[in-house]
Amino acid sequence: MTTPPVALTIAGSDSGAGAGIQADLKAMSALGVFATTVVTAVTAQNTAGVTAVHPVPTDVVDAQISAVLDDFAVRSVKTGMLATTATVRLVADRAAAGDLPALVVDPVMVASTGRRLLDDDAVVAYRERLAPHALLVTPNLFEAAILAGVEPNEGDDVEAMVDLATRIHGLGPTWVLVKGGHLPGVHSTDTRPAPERVADVLFDGTDVTVLEQDRVDTRNNHGTGCSLAAATAALLASGLDVPTAVGRAKEFVHQALVGAAGWDLGRGHGPLDPFGWSRD
Ligand SMILES: Nc1ncnc2c1ncn2[C@@H]1O[C@H](COP(=O)(O)OP(=O)(O)OP(=O)(O)O)[C@@H](O)[C@H]1O
Ligand SMILES: [Mg+2]
Image (cartoon, rainbow, N blue to C red; front, side, top):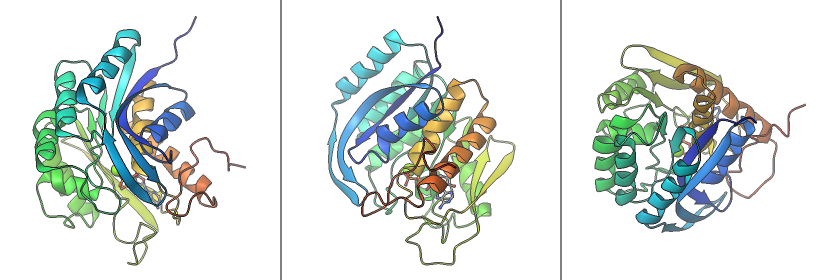
């Protein structure tokens, strides 16, 4: 008898299956980890946008977490869209109780369009209750500004990203990864000059590591953030340390972006290729 490593994702459902819990399930599965799934919200969504969000009642989210933890030896947890302040507080309470090992918090607050998804109370709950219990927090540039309590667009270069990471580390997480997918020109809809490389900043309170990848020129980037956090959680469940897991997770997302760059799937931002179907 063998037991595969088990990870848990607590996130929203994306009916288009490019992001959210579906992306998490695929990323974790592709990396050989058994994924368990707690659904926090049902979204009506496709590659072009989100048309409805129906939060799952917080007591039902709690019951799902208990059902999974009662039966599986969960080694790592990833949170994505938590949808309501009450659910952010619930997850924070479970983390404070020691129920959520190797916790990767992807603080889904701002959609790639820049639209705010959560109200101010939820932001306070992220800053004061959940972030302190995270092993790793993975904000994009917009979310990093909100968590750091500074104006958006201050994090337009690596130096500013280091400053954001330092401020967020002050909230109490062990590690911070500020993601650079929204640096000037990286996104396919951004008309500013495109850089050749995309940088993320990893910080543990002492050492700064700048993780760089070649920019993939593609519209098919739906779910990069979800996939990165889920892949990191999966690799933590496999026993890797944080910097190694983040580095391999970035490589995984990069390959998934390259693989899907030639896909015609949906009329908006198409999904990634987590299983390497396009690999030679
Ligand atoms: N065009 C690209 N080429 C290479 N890497 C990219 C590209 N876009 C994003 N990434 C990488 O993908 C990861 C996700 O970053 P991003 O800043 O887009 O997160 P996000 O905004 O949370 O994503 P999402 O829109 O899925 O929520 C980062 O590691 C980033 O460097
Ligand atoms: Mg994101």
